[in-house]
Length: 164
Image 1 (tube, helix red, strand yellow):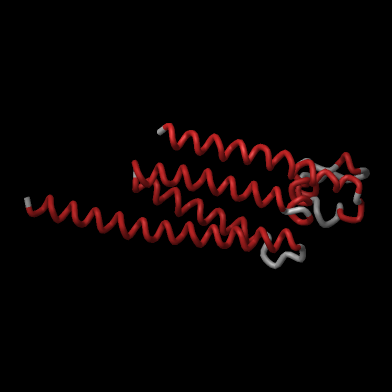
Image 2 (image 1 turned 90 degrees about the vertical axis):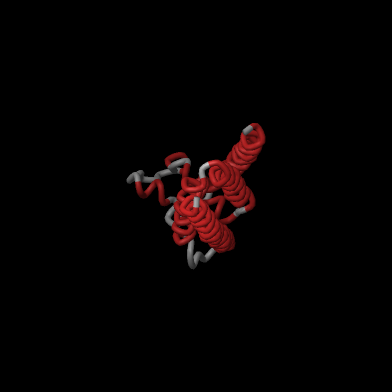
């Protein structure tokens, strides 16, 4: 259990640091008024009228950073996936049924997230799409192979129980 917690703490630390840097880099949008129309979906969602850069919702900083300076948003995604791998490995090891459900649900969420940036016109958007597609497909593969292994194990346990 300590190993899993240590890995999760390391992942959370990297996520926190990269989130701070992505937020800082994304704050450059406050000075670029021609980009407000295209990179402020959260401000638009909350019906915030942007008169000056300080009216922009803080979440839009991450959108801008992901579009134009994607290094730290990509590190955020990778650290989130790392935490997800550690939690999924723990669940698969100790609760295989719940672990498979976890992997399946998270893989669907990752693919759904990636579909939002499909066909992006920016380098960062395309990069995030391909990373989420790759991570989502790996997650689906882990889910399928884990399910096959779990069902094979269950059949052998049932057959052994039945023969006794």
